[in-house]
Length: 84
Length: 418
Image (cartoon, rainbow over all chains, first blue to last red; front, side):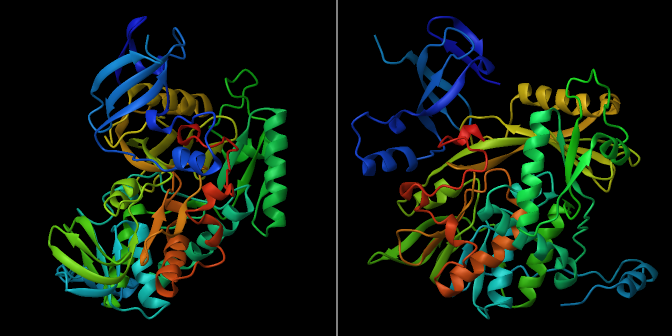
């Protein structure tokens, strides 16, 4: 079980959140079909720290960027996304 | 290879069980092989066996980073069935199920394959419509399926909560009587023994750390036990496909997630079929030792931890107890997790990669065990001939960019939506 520190709501259980995708798999609206296929389907799938887009679905519903370790589940940073 | 039989068992019993020997050699890696299979799980060992048996390729090594069958082969809930909805998956899994049916004899190894039936429960009129549709599709494809009324289900599984007030009321079900379970470890051991007898080197404690690529073609692998040359290399490491393919500079349409499973303390026989559900994600069977084996949803985020979250344990237990209330009195003995290769359409990948001589078998999500024999046959065909078998052809790596996905759940390109 992960404890995720939502910047708006404070630390909450991870069941309130949903994982969306790695940050580098976010598709620009003007992507060509070739770029879209590459961005969507070619994943680093790292064992280590990964920047991921999550959402506080069952909380404030804000989008968040997590820097999370995929083997230890350590969360190094949570920031609102997009920032500011 | 010393053949096993009822007589040899009896003789060993009279002998004080002293005559048993290793089932396969502890092979040292040679300098070069025709084919190297990376990954000593069920799929990799099956591939090596069929390479030697069906295709006459005897110079084969299986490289396993730890011990064979120690990954997802030993972590699944052992269910075997072929009652899928998409025609490509029906062909793949039925090909596999047919192989299961004669496999213990072929390998001379008791896989404890038990065709005790695989039941999908329906909990609403809508569920029953979906089950009837699936059953029709299966029968049109020549795969056995029988729709069951509520009364038939109640007779088949008397411990189900048949009350109209049940959290998941039971309206009926769909059974595949040829479905069932098999002993997962025995699958790895049986294939290893049979492959070894045909000259395959099963090499444990040998981790692949890189590929030797010359002029865009794979010519070998680097391992913790030295460099080994090969004409063809097959990756077969579902759970870690992204990491191993990454050593060759490839990025795959796969995320690694985790799936948990649970067993209870052993009890007397209480469930003689496999119970699944159309609407909720719990699958329940009873092992031959008497343990209740339960699985559910994955945890829905990328992880290599092989360690799941308690909320999923709670959810799966709640679902199992709501279906079979008698299970509420059981103590759970163990829970564990396996790392699953989640592909972007829920279907596996069996095919060539952009690198000449390098092939991929992975992306099995959390449904790979049932496919073990079929996957091995199809991957051996690919590695021996360099061309995909017609059953494997739809599962090529480039299907995502072509838009030719095979999406059983109809959930779109999100690994966490399975």
